[in-house]
Image (cartoon, rainbow, N blue to C red; front, side):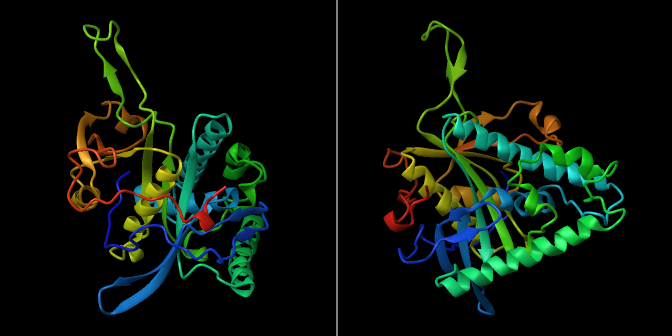
Length: 327
């Protein structure tokens, strides 16, 4: 969950109803823009960032960015431990696929949000140009996969022969596409499963039983990652605003996350957005299970919207613009 970031990007999800959807031909799915805004990095430079939900074909570049931020994975093929790097990428994609399966089975909602350099396509010509950028990145990745000895080659006994079987068919056309090649600078996951939000513990004296049950009506934000070169430009704030907009559209009344308080910048960011320490620390085995340092993360909850105790300046997340609702 830890995300080292940044200045304000957008006050909330905004987009013009006439902005066209971008269609990725690899999946045939529409990706409607969640937010589209100019952001700045000091007085010296400025640029635009747009945020949209991921499609299956985006999962590889999204996992590439995630691993570069959280695991410091090197270029595939450029590191001595190539199998480890590829395993981390596939592991992240499998986690996304599991969330998709849970959502299909009625367990809740799940969306992976992506932040890209540049404004969202607003004309058919711009949408076609965006498709061309991704197609060119795909072509380069596929050419690299055909190179003899490439770890991305799916022939036996190359690593991807073993690892690629776990990838859904819609994911495979994106294998090898790097985040940088498609100008992807930020990712964040949001779901309404309620399983990772700090649960309510049952007390045997008052409830007659022990254990816990998941919190209904809570969204959970995780794996917020921003490319180092794009930090301090409001990308994380924009992703959080988009995630909270999704939560509001789903009818969630509050949002939770986990963060290591020793990482001061992301902790300060979340506090500035209204998140408060829940007092719940993740189980001691989780860092080891996930291959992280032994520092345990703490759960943070943004109080129910409008409830007493909401922090000053924290605004109630609003649903997405009706013309830009995600389906």
